[in-house]
Structure formats: structure tokens, C-alpha cells
Length: 304
Image 1 (spheres, rainbow, N blue to C red):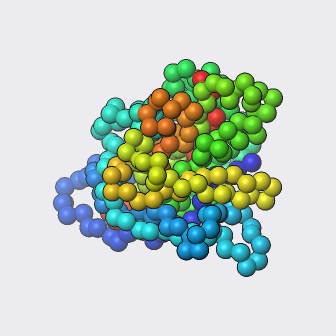
Image 2: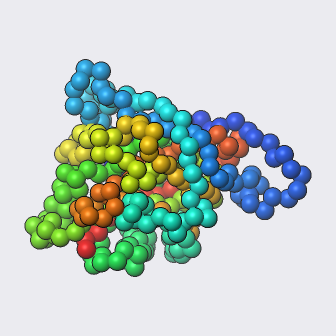
Image 3: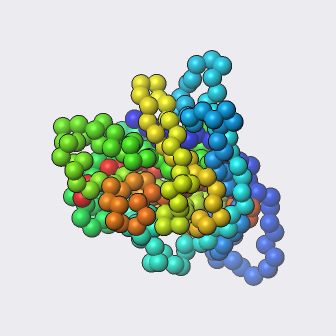
């Protein structure tokens, strides 16, 4: 079943066109012939604004009762400098920064239109990638995935709001929900929730994914949000703006690139509690007419 653990937000308009100033042939282009934006960029990101009435913030994942707003909190837009990971990938690790980059990963799944086929073909690839990439990991449980497309009729669009998919409380609840027979034992050891993110129609030109270095994110910046499903309540985290946060993106991500996002880590001695704020953003350099981003994120419980 395809689900989404993050806040569904309509995609923004693409930025205005930027002419190619040089007549020389640019080999760093996408299949449409557009130059791929590289390097640092300043873009506007959406951060948390508290409910005006002081109530506990919530978000409905699906339908809510008539007259009830989907969410009761607002958003504050701030211009943020976002640095390019391309060329400095080795400077970041999932333990120190709560994200990591892995290039040149093959896959036998190409269509990503059938959930059963995705689970049969792509899930085992993701499981192997995590076991091979994360020292100490001995058990991986993939519990859902979300496909996002930028088209107007898409079920899920890129999320243009800074957030973290899980909180400590919801991470423990995920273990109990998805591995109930072993949860008591597993909760006594190290467990992590990691998203594996990749584009489906790369290189990414529109709505790239920005991530914040976990070590530069203060606990006080994180706000638990009650995530209301029809049959249960979960919890995500919204993020307040703090000028001390450090933001990055991986320019021109290809279909063979994988971005690992750590949403929770029970080992508090590793990094800064292992939680990475992230968001799609509108790159003002995106050429007019560029193909909208399509992507898949698979969410995993990782033990060990």
C-alpha cells in the first residue's frame, strides 16, 4: 500500500526562465537540453508557524470532518542559502549529519506504476542497499513508500514544507506496529528510521530536495505535530526557522542516485540524535518548461 508519512502540500510554480548566456555547447544538460542548476542557491523555504489560539498542532492525512481545517498551524517563509553536495559527498555521513549520498545504484524496476511490483522488485534492492551501507545493521523492515509527481492530477506532490517524518514517540510506535512479535526485544537495541529517496525521471530540474545538517539543528526548533489518520494517530515534526541551520541539496540527482534520510536514531551518542529536516524547494534557476520532478521514497526500520 502506498502511504505518505509527511505533510501533503501542493507544488509551487516553477521559477522564471533563465537564458543560457554562452553560445558554447553545455554538456551538463538534461534530456530536454536545459542546463542543470549547480552550486549554492538561495531559495525560500516554508517553516513552522504556531497556531494562533495556542492549541496543539495537528494535521489530517486524509479526509477530515466537514468544517475542520486540514491543519491548524501556519507557515513562515524564509530565504535560505542551500549548498550543493555535489563534489563534496564524502564530507557527510548518516551518523554525523543524518543524511548520506550513494551514487551509481542499479535497479531492475523502471516503471514505478504498480505497488505490488514495486514491493516485489524494488523493496529487496532497498533492503540490500541499507544492509550493505549501514555498519551494524542486521534487520531491515520496509513499511511503506510514497511516489510523488509534479503534475496537477498527482495523488502526492512534492512537499514544500520543512518537516521530519518521525518523532521518538512515533518511531517506537512504528516498531510496535510493524514488528509486534519482536518489538519488546528490538526496542531494547538500536533502531533507526531511514528514508531512501531517489528521482524517477532524473536528472532533477524542478523541486529538488533540501536537507538540513542534523548537527546544526536545535531540539528547540522541532515541534511535534499530531498526524491524524482515519484509524490511528501518528506524529511528525515541524521545524521552526533558525538562522544557524545549514542546508544542502544534491544537484541534478539521477535515477541511479540514492539519498538516505535518517528520521530517528535511538542511539543518542551518534551525531545530534539523528533527525534530518527536509523539504522540496523551488529553485529560482529552474528553466521554464523543465520537466516536473517525479520521485519515490521508501521508509525503513533499521535494527542494529
